[in-house]
Image 1 (tube, rainbow, N blue to C red):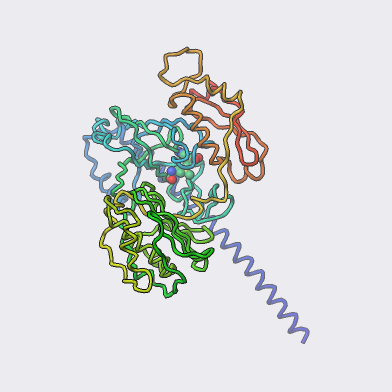
Image 2: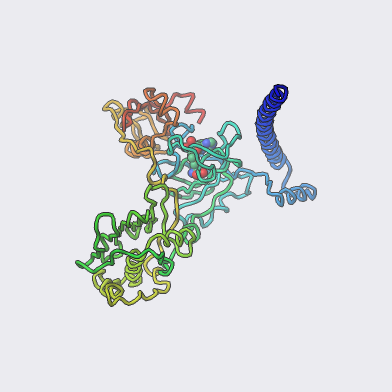
Length: 490
Ligand SMILES: C[S@@+](CC[C@H](N)C(=O)[O-])C[C@H]1O[C@@H](n2cnc3c(N)ncnc32)[C@H](O)[C@@H]1O
C-alpha cells in the first residue's frame, strides 16, 4: 500500500517537473523566435542599406535584370526594401517631449526635402501637392533603439493598462512604421513645410500622400434603418414636441431625453438613454468630426453611428424604440437639408409618429447626405477621448517667461545676440507648443509613478526646457538656448 503511495507521489512530482520544464521550453522558444525575428530584421535593414548604397553608386541607366527579378520576387513576398524619400528636419530633436500625436501640439514645425537620389528632379514630384492642406507622412521610427515589440503594450495615456499593439499608435510594432497626418503649410521647390507633427529630427520618411477627406475620412449618410432599432425593448416614454427648437422626451431621471436641437445647421444634440440600455448618444455640432457618438455607460467605448456598421446595428438593437423615435426625428431634421425648417416645424412633421395616433416614421432616403456630406463618422476606443490620465494645467514661472520672451523668430532682423528659433515663429508660438506638450503629460508611466519629483527636461526647436510636475499641473522653470554641441548635432 505504502509502496503504491510512494509511487503515485513520485509520479506526481515527475509530472510537476515535466510541466515546469515544458513552460521553460516554451519561454526559451519564444525568446529564440524573437531573437530570430530581430536578427532577420537587422539583416533586412542591412540589405536595404547595402542596396541603397549600391543604387547610389551604380548609374541608373544600366539595366540589372537579375536585380529586377529579385525585387519582383521580394515584392510579391511583401518584403520590399525601402528607400527614404527624405529626412525630417524637426523642431523636436529627441523623443522625450515630442508630442505623442500631432494634434496635441499645433505649432510644431518641420521641413522635408525630397532627396535627389530618389528623383532626378525632386521638385517635379511635388507639383500639385500645394492644392492640399494636409499630407499623410509614412515614416520609420528610426530611434526605437531596437526592433523589439510585444503583442500587448501599455500606452502612456492608459496609465499602465495593457492593450493589443494594433489598437494603439505605439512606435514599437513589428514593422516600425509611423503614420502622421501633418499640416502642409507650403511647398517650396523640393521641400515641404509642415506643422502639426510628432516626428523627431532625422526621421526617415518613406512616403507622403495627400490627405483627401473624401477618401480618408469615413463619410456617412444618416441612413439609419429604423427597423434595426427595434430591440423589442418597449419604451416607457415617447417624445413630444415642446418649445421651438427643442424637443424632449418626457423623462424621469435616467430615461431617454433629447435636450437641444437648434434650427441652424450647427445644431447640437445630446441624448441620454435609459441606464438599463447601457448606452448614450451624443450629437455634437455639425462641424465636428464625430457628430454621432455612442458611449457605453462605462465609457470604455465611444461609438459613432454609421449606417450598415455591424456594431452600429448591434448597438442599435440595444437602444430601444424610444431612441428610434429620437433618431427618426433627427433623421427628419437632417433630411430638411440646408433649408432645414426649424426643428419645431420639423418635429411638428415628424411628430406624427408620436402619441396614440402615431404614424410610422417615413424612411428618409439618403437624406443625411444633404446635411452631412462633410462629416466623418468613425468608431474609437473610449479612452482616447476620456483617458484615465487627466490633462495638466501648464504654468511658466516669471523667470521662464522672461527667458522664453528673449527668443527670436528665424527670420527676425533683431539683435544677433539674442537666441533664435530655427522653426518656430516666436515666443508666442513656442509657449503654445510647450503648453501642448506638457498638458498631455509627456512622462512615461514609470516616471509619473516612481520619479514624480524629478525635473523633466525636453528640447523644443533651439530651446532647452526644464520643468517639474505637481498635482494636476506642470510648471516651466527654465528656457535656455540649447548647448552649442547639441544645436550642431541637430
Ligand atoms: C506615439 S508615436 C505616433 C506617431 C504617429 N503619429 C503614428 O501614429 O504612427 C509618436 C511618438 O513617437 C516618437 N517618435 C517620433 N519620431 C520618432 C522616430 N523617428 N523614431 C522613434 N520614435 C519616434 C516620439 O516619442 C513621439 O512622441
